[in-house]
Length: 359
Figure 1 (tube, rainbow, N blue to C red):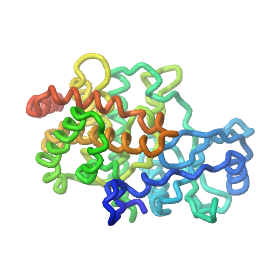
Figure 2 (cartoon, helix red, strand yellow):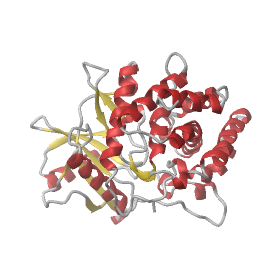
Figure 3 (cartoon, rainbow, N blue to C red):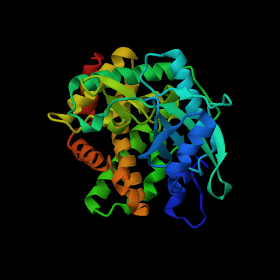
């Protein structure tokens, strides 16, 4: 269910994951509280957390502890949930200093439950530690944050380097290597100039990056280091307190993870590519990149922006009741594409090589 649907009628659904075409069935707060009590032995108050595909809750227990309850979309195969749980457990064992959620076992010792919900549909359930902190998107952005975040992403990549799972290679619409499969969604961009911009960078990806990706280093990566998935210390906003949401994790070229992370640092003051260069250099200092990987980052960052504007624009039309959450990164992606139209590819590549002391 996590792969790309193929439909004979040619609808746009065939270009995106089935999971993105199915709205998450709502779980009552009371049911979430009963679930946590019966399966985890925790009595607490539940409150909703936003999500693109799943049903997530913050659980505040009577002893002051807090947890995150995640109930998967019924269209998502159980192996994907198990993949995410096993990855978090692996990271905790390999690099326990990384600020990522910890998996909590149920009363029967299981780390990942499969439980029946409405219409007897089975959904994956897991309970994680709730990391305290302030979302990065709510505070002023700084260079110190950027450098720390890049270094943490590099550490996370190193921690995941030795990890694999049977579901790691699942087909994911948000995986940059699959960007070409979303070409049909370009027709849903109403503004003609924006549509041409997105098509230009998708063409650029297919010309320069797509042929080279199969020969690059590949592994399991986080794949979604956006400001909504990062927490900072409430008192010291320069200190990264947590990396959240492993829902888009996938096995893909390692450099795609760098491109995703770097793409969210182009909307600050000054020259946006300077911020990208600083992010890439900070990552490179912890986990060295290869020259060929660095030279593809311009194409991959642009492709990530194209994924964002096409997928979120299309999904917001389908699910207007959740459009505010779905479109949270849409405007920033359009700003990024507009800027990249003004930056020659060769100039961008040279600036990144200089930042990484490659020339």
